[in-house]
Image (cartoon, rainbow, N blue to C red; front, side):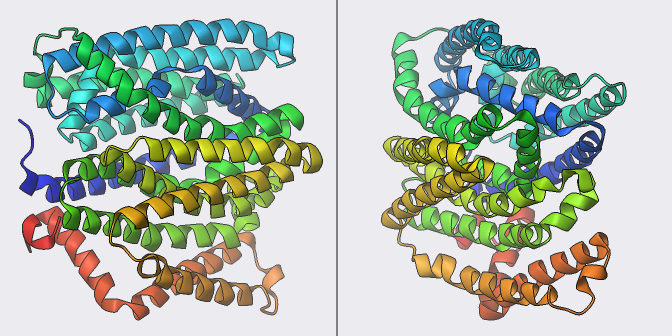
Length: 502
């Protein structure tokens, strides 16, 4: 049942396209829900939820052990792999749940509001129950059934969003946000089991047995990967929430959290699908340098071609965008948004380097990247926050992002025959040209008298359009070839995967 190598390119592109499509639909639902919830709930509610999420993520052990990543690197899905994976997952998840509940009891004694303890416990429960279908999800991922799993996630998101809006309207506060996690967890459990029974039944119906050697291998390979990922996820992505929520206020954290979530739109719409499929594809072609190089170059191209225009539009229209989406009451978020959207533009390249390293069997590199970022954020974050408040936290996040990008880029360009000028030269020219042209808009007579909606539309078209036109004009053949390759590979009509080079 293992996939033939000649089909990898077509399946990878199909998965990326479908994942992106489902992601766009799901994010449209999420964006609409977030906008409405933000208008219904105050910044303090979002601040409490964000701070509780930090503690839940910090205390959660399942992803830190990285067993799923290690299992994905195994060549075949055997009963011994599924059984060993399942037992380890149960043990780790149980320990995580007990630890989270115990720590949540202590949080009020450290001065945290009671609502934060509720958030920690509920999110810990939501992390525990997916372990029941962990082997089914593993089998689906190994067979690249990602689009169907994404469809399950979309269904859960739609149901959860509707319920959350009703609860917010009823005035239940932070439970409006928690119910989304509860519903998506329940739908995900049922959906994964249902899809697995129809797509990979032959794999999951094997007799599950525990194999000590396999279990030790999963831990040996998984723990460094898990720690690296959690260094990125918990410390790098959420330690800023801890700093602002603890040393400033939950209200300020609410403004910051809205800015952070909004800044992640380009990242969410692109990187989730790209890095998820990329890791699996890089793993399968790790021994074929020409194909691996082309796959990485194509990933760089997607990120610079689609991610940068979205980030430019958000950066230059931040105050107007916040006003349109969340009303003037949330304008303090615009200050944070301009910084954070620049950081979000860079973070996918860090993820790309880590995915490549994992695929090539190097757990030391992602661990180095994550630990270096964590160290930078802790080293600079606390003193800058105490000195400058939330602004200092934002500056520390920028330093952290720069450290991660430098290390990730150094690894990629050292391992593969790719030129840094070839990858970033044209996008930087396009970025500069677009920025200068967009800033001229602000000097136009009567600009400040226009409505926020008109300014936002004008800025978005100018910033995104000028960037795309510039990079296309500088390399029209490459743009045409890449677009035709993606379309042809997805449809599997114009050229075969082998001829295309992946």
